[in-house]
Image (cartoon, rainbow, N blue to C red; front, top):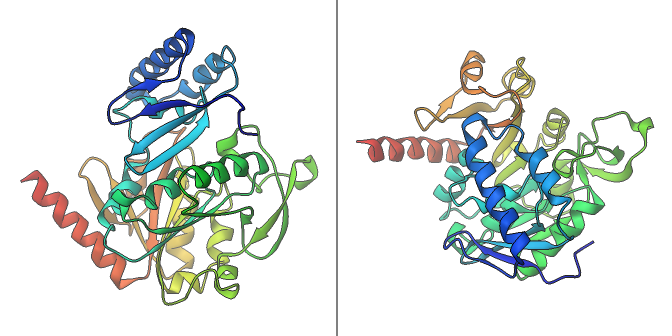
Length: 322
């Protein structure tokens, strides 16, 4: 449920925080300091500490102005999203690199596991090219916040309440953290019953066209492989899937599946070289996945168009370092 109190306002560009009482301002300073301090060890412990601080706050939303055309609301003090109060914090750099480079491309974002819709808000904003976005989220609690973010941005992206899997059906969604709800758990353990769609169902229902271009974010908490299986036709189009590989998965399960069982080229962003590298041996992920408690995005595509764009991105990065 959306908080009845007027939301706090924060502008990331200027750092101006408005509509707070003295205690809420103090908490903001603590959240920023904690983010900066924990950044040297991949923000380990930050979420837990932020959520403890949140218990001292009234239930209230904050609306963060991500750019001049993008508003993102979430509960004030939320451990996952409060890092945005730190103006130097960057969320999923490797995705932003591709999104920013694709401003001139006519593509649709399929934001699977959208949570509150961060990427749908950004990609549909003018600085990112005002692209069409479909934000897919199964959790009723998360979906209310996702729908609110669509509303405060003029309804410019489409929220859909469902999970993504290998085929159409229903599943049980469970979990204790809003950023980690999953249908991969034990269905007998309770939880929320949610509808499930396959990516290819979006083609069959006319939501998307097989001749379109797509960036497909799969942040689906343990069912990435099932989602890939359900998107065989869509992934034959001009598509890129962006899948989360968890740092504690030393077997690199999702990447191994993409390499061994799909026609997709597997690509990962190396933060040291700032290049997108083609993965032929999984050992490169041993080097890049340095933290065991965060997620890393890998990319899969069979599209000559997108492969050329990624190669151009590398060329641009090389020029910037000269």
